[in-house]
Amino acid sequence: VRQGEIFSLLGSNGAGKTTLINILTTFLRPTAGTVQILGKDLERNIQFIRSNIACVAQHVSTDDNLTLVENMKFQSGLYGLDKVRMKERINQLVEFFNLSNYIDKKVETLSGGIKRRLDIAMSMMSYPKILFLDEPTVGMDIQSRQSMWEMLRKIKKELGVTIFLTTHYLEEADRLSDTICFIKDGKKVMQDTPANLKQFTRKNMIRITITDNQDSEKLKELLLQKDYITHVGVDDRSLNIQVNNSQQYFSELNTYVLSTKIGFEGIEITEPTLDDIFLEIIGERSN
Image (cartoon, rainbow, N blue to C red; front, side, top):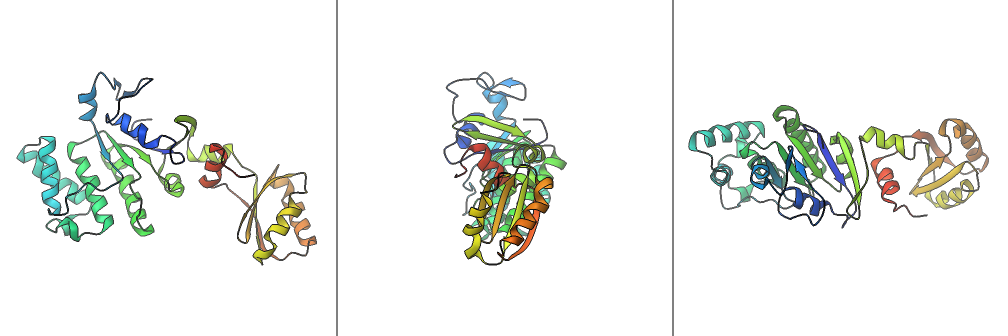
């Protein structure tokens, strides 16, 4: 993981994502291998590493009975900040996370998105160099998630913090990440930038949107008889077709579909999504 990047760890349930974060944040001792964080061996320098990292777990850890600012003061005490540094840091983070309108409100009255924002702000009280986030937007609506994405980009850019993220939302990883790592059964399968990952797999994709979804399976069976088509995925009225060369076979495929007399609304060469890549790399695509 490079300093100052957003790094996303992806994998199926049980792949080892949360276990790995628990090891990296010193909650679990590794049973094998070695870990270096900020150039220091994890097991030999636990206190140094703990003082330079922060972790936001899946569940919000704020106290609903306290106000927003009381939560931040309590967190400051846990980190051992004196009154001057505490006041300075709280003011900085309240402004940075746009929390000034909620400062004297009890946390129980705040929305889930604001609570999560506060949770992350509290984790930043100790001026960490690395922020670990375990599924930070789970359960959020799309508007709250997009707001959180902007916040994480801001943390990276303006505070220079390295962000280590796990998420089940592949769109989230695609939008945010400088680097993505796929793991399966506790082992790294592939790691690269989102752009390079998309070049690696399923480059030659053509999507056909048909008029009547009752024709989906019929057209799929016809297409699979073509030698240059290696896979057809059906999603309601859309057929996602993997071919040997999308540029070469686009016109031929268009002509063929017209000849079948099956009505369709559009045909296009498409870029694979992270969903496609995830299923391809993790090896869970159904045949």
